Image (cartoon, rainbow, N blue to C red; front, side, top):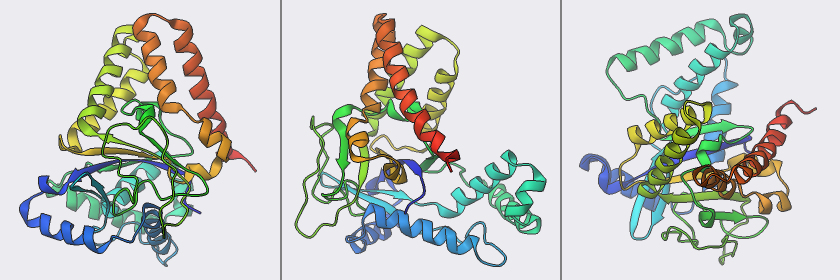
Length: 308
């Protein structure tokens, strides 16, 4: 079982990478052709568990990962590097800042945490970038994550069908047009069922939609938590994404908290878009109705974190 975590991933075109890296990632994409997205997430999770149950625990790998999620979109290959070491460093820092010192020591021995922080600081002193190509969210999805996508870009797989975002690409989904108007759930010969809900779109389109949502929020609501969250997401995309990149929203392990009917009925992207439209056109009833619908759905999911 995967963690109850959702992912927002930026996939860079291999052709946009430094020339010295292109050959490696092209070969990597070819060699990982049989590894699906779910298998890649499971491998990441298993590696993290092995490090954390070691004695003493290894909070971050000594070397950065040379693995990535891979997509084929049209005739082009795109990669989203795992950046396991950087993401681990940032996660440790976030955990320690949000947890009382006496409590965090029960999970992470202080000498180990201090050594991890010192290694991170040495890396930062070299001027290395701190931006990751993957954002994660446990027990829910922040509402701004839905704004860059359109309802027709949803790829839903329940108990049958291909993984809609395999490590090789779309494994038969071939979602290189921006929208199809329907979910893709057909199976291909030899593919294994993979329960999933994924959105993917081109970065230029994603940023245009997000920018529009931010403009509407700023005009209608002024300074607000929603506006701040939207601007932080916009800043992240501006800092990591090549103009020709792809953006993917993956429900990840959250799909195991929802039954088939709940997944079919999950129209969070459409609801957020309708709420923005209501603000823009002055239809307050529409905005309130859509906002309540999407927030109530995710509050009920987040409440499961504390369920017995």
